[in-house]
Image (cartoon, rainbow, N blue to C red; front, side, top):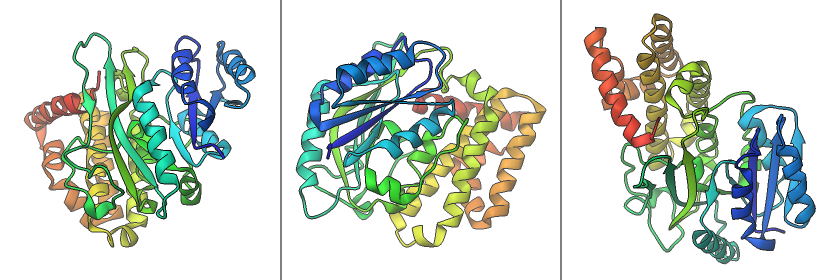
Length: 341
């Protein structure tokens, strides 16, 4: 069995996917690289087959009709045979030295008497035009040098959350959780790092700058104007997260720290949805914002009150033009935290 399976969702990625794949090949025979060609119209399929031919014991090329990022991640999970599973987007890459440390740590923990469910490491924003790179790290929040549980975590500050770039899950845990990301939908990475959490018991934090997250292409899904144009997909993801937290509420609330974390993460996502709709300035989107908060209220009144009367919830629901101006100020803070373009 391979130690680590890495899925690379690819859609028209011929211009940059080689850098991604080459960085992952450094892991050698311990790694299984699954290149998922999601209905690309360029040379992505040929490049995937080239790597599969050159490295048959390491690289798998899987081709499917276009289903979006979520469908590609689902395919990666289905095809994964490694003990652990990681998603690396085709325009991102990993740092060799940190990669070796990640593999060494996984190898060491795999032989222990407690199953490691999730390994967390740092990621670096590789943003065009910025000399100083922002590093998302967790050493003030998570214990180091040992396996730990949710009860051992310190309080997560606003903006410090475990994102897709940060995590490696145990493959069987993902499969047993039944996670299935929606197709033809952007921003499903938020679901990916949300739904498996109630199944995560044992974690380990490795304080290395492993994942390099590239930001700079005009067509990227995190570009502000792109996000506004796809606001219905952001709302869809937001509602799915609400549904999940409400459905699993009784189970999750048994673990106070996990419940707190998942509520706070949902608050962040709802804030992002809200500020984007405010930022668009259209009456249609302002009505959609109101409807999103009403949806939350209809699903769970107490959860609604928790989010609505939090600092960010209050800021997103101030009345009138003046209130929206204050909300946009809050949005600019979110820009700094989440690196929106």
